[in-house]
Length: 587
Image 1 (tube, rainbow, N blue to C red):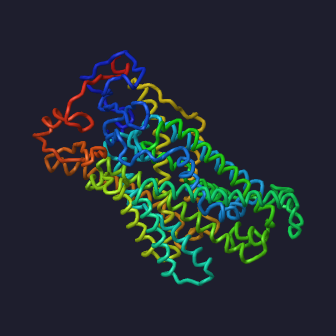
Image 2 (image 1 turned 30 degrees about the horizontal axis):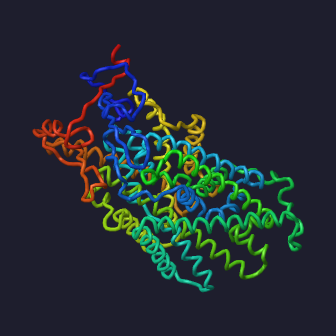
Image 3 (image 1 turned 60 degrees about the vertical axis):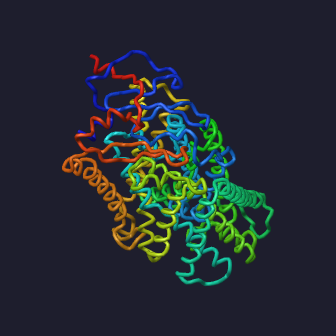
């Protein structure tokens, strides 16, 4: 029954129904009861309106302990930096090979833009409900599924903390660094450089928030210049201005000519496009650090995704104008490598490309670290991790030190421990699959959240996504989840690894099942036989700004007293409440 109650909350016999609608959250009651759900009102110092959240959520921090350093420029480039990674340099040839034609590959890149734009609209609606909370998915899953209590926070915490590592970009940086130096490096030399560059990125994020954002912004601007340069160069080539490329429009004649792809190839092309557009939502991890967050995010995340989408198409056109289609299909080099070699015809072009990829990989590292550190901090503030004060603290530099340290530790293990090849690829795949499951759950949860808040009398937020956009995003993600089960052309062992192609899917689902078993053990079995209940207590840290929940064990004989002296959010004071109940109960 616990899993049924998360959809609507059980009805309380003591609830009092009222027909008075709450028209303004700034003047509404401090707590709204709806069955076993309790929505508490709070206002943050980022200029957002007062907002309601279910009391299971981490406490709202009135003054952000991380400051308010995220302006419009940072919103744009923290997304651009994560969007423009290594994908645009390496994936176009892969997508062309899987789609079979120039025209269809360009359409797939546009579908990726639609996916990212739909995702932004969904995240904006979630953020408008909770404009005083950072952490994006952490908060949205917590609030969409408040019952069973703590289940989604626990499951997401395992996925985000244990599978949190940035090893792939660090290793890409190391590989291209050795290529730029013209030196053949051993596996351990590459790993050494990867650990070093990741450590530098971590130190930037730990040292100072303003420094981290400035480094990220500078790298984002430089990457944007590189991609613009490729796009403009392609237009110059299309104009027939390079004698050694006599027929730059050849690939665009009969653009849809080519082999007919099967379902597996098309699905893999969509996965690649999704990877290239990963990062469109990064700024939502810092909502409580943004002044007037909803209008700022609405305008500037849209600017970032439109600019990047246009540049992606221009880069693809540039590649196709320079490199014959047959070479794309057979070459082992990346699309950008072929483009630079054929356009500039000198060794310096290859060195320049290697430097661009290094720049892009490091910028991506910075953007990922900034966003993930906020997500992990928010997970810690939910109280489901041991020592919540450690995760929530911003001492001594006003930065998320604890989350950064765990990111460094997990990434260090992932760089040093697994050998390159099957083991490394398996872990990378495993990292993405549970994440997709949670995104599907979050998308469905938006409809659930709308229904619950409407039932409770909470007014509509200042932004509402189109239903068609949400359904498109959901369909895309469901397709991505289903695709890995489709046998590849090479048979059971014909996937990315030499063993069964869907192993990482089974392991990913297994991790979530284990989380469910752990949840039942921790929340139900142990308290039953231990004679206690789990309760949430609000804790303010030494600076007063940082706040966290702490889950504590309360003996059964003390539960009534505890509930009398703590309010729904774990504070040591009572609040005036208004009870709501739907008309079905009254009838």
